[in-house]
Amino acid sequence: MNTIETIKKHKIIAIARKVPKDKILQTAEALFAGGIRLLEVTFDQNNPHCIVETSDMIGVLVKRFGTDMCIGAGTVMTITQAEAAVNAGAQYLISPNFSPAIVKKTLELSAISIPGALTPTEIVAAYEAGAQIVKLFPAGDLGVGYIKSIISPLSHIPMMAVGGIDEKNIADFLKTGLMGVGIGSNIVKNSLIEQNRFSELTELAKKYTSIIL
Image (cartoon, rainbow, N blue to C red):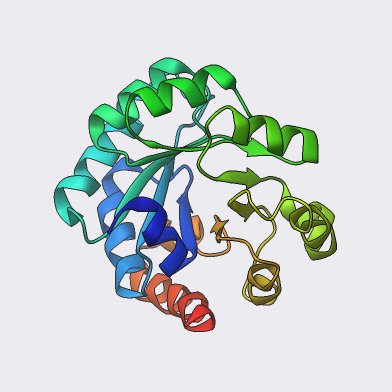
């Protein structure tokens, strides 16, 4: 199954942000046990070593899960980060913004391009530049009503939403026609990870995956 089909089927991309390198594998295994099949490992732009550390984590996850879990990179802000992520095995690259250069490079690297946008103009520009999916961010700040209004005239553009999505509103977001959603700390809780409470992380993931079944 390819990346886009996996997103269509499983809907949720769990976002691992600032997860310690030595806990990323246990975190992913706990999420996988809870039904998560897509995991985004983000670049921490404030960390001078983020390219090496994030790429290493992606490599570890790809080696462990193979095709069982679809691994991608998030907060991709530079060409160097895009290249490093794909070289490590990332199948999709997600950004908070739309950069024509990064979209172009992602396509050259044969990965799935998911740039961030919010207004109709930004969304169409990203799609016309070659993005296969457009990430609506920050979706939660404007809410489901805004998403509905955006999707109505732009239903030909595959979109996902990120920001402010939780177990109470995920169903409403998905009912708008979104291909999927990205969820960070509401699923990938660093407080649980720090305390090695991985069984609780699995149960939390199950709450979300059970909603979309």
